[in-house]
Image (cartoon, rainbow, N blue to C red; front, top):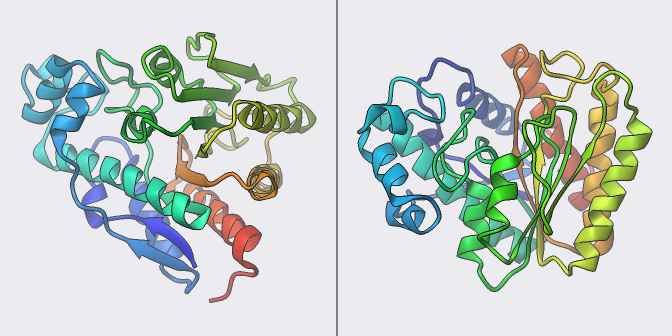
Length: 293
């Protein structure tokens, strides 16, 4: 069975459907017998004061000052949101440990890659990708970010964490910088093609192998889908699924452990949950064989 991290505590009522979709995806997967669910405990908040500015962390934990506490975009601040974020990030570490043990695992979570050291941004509170690199300081953590928006926050963290490499493939740059261990491939939303995207995926795995990555953390973004308000016109459902097949087959071929998470997606919730669930099904088929009810 594919090991998956999730907790009902991941949910918080917000003005977006960001956390509603986590519950929706979990409910879809729970209809199958192919997934072993693990419920993480809450993480020690003090861990984040070594990752982010202590002033920002304290603001998010307490709700004061409100402007800094809600800088990521979730307003108003509330304890349910705080506890959800802490649980989600506990799942990041548990899922990574499970991936090291089993070769693959997942966390039904999102909201990481725009958060930088000083503050969160664009519905990303704490950078749960950089958190993995901080926690596994003796491991080389390679981020394959396939969200439609470039992971600018994670790119910045590569300058603070020597064991972190970020590779973003995006349609919308979102101010993505380029550093020694932060690179990107821009595939145009209208004039791009899946051939270009496929080449970028192979380049990412080549870089991961050259760098001798110990694990790949894959952000399986759905906001690049053609029905998404931020999507690429050419990126159909079939091509999204082909992307997942390529990623998981390359990770398996290269014998690199992989942990994957959800990422952006802003279309109809039911359709979005189905797209995300298919990532899990493809991962299961690649590593364990055919899905069964």
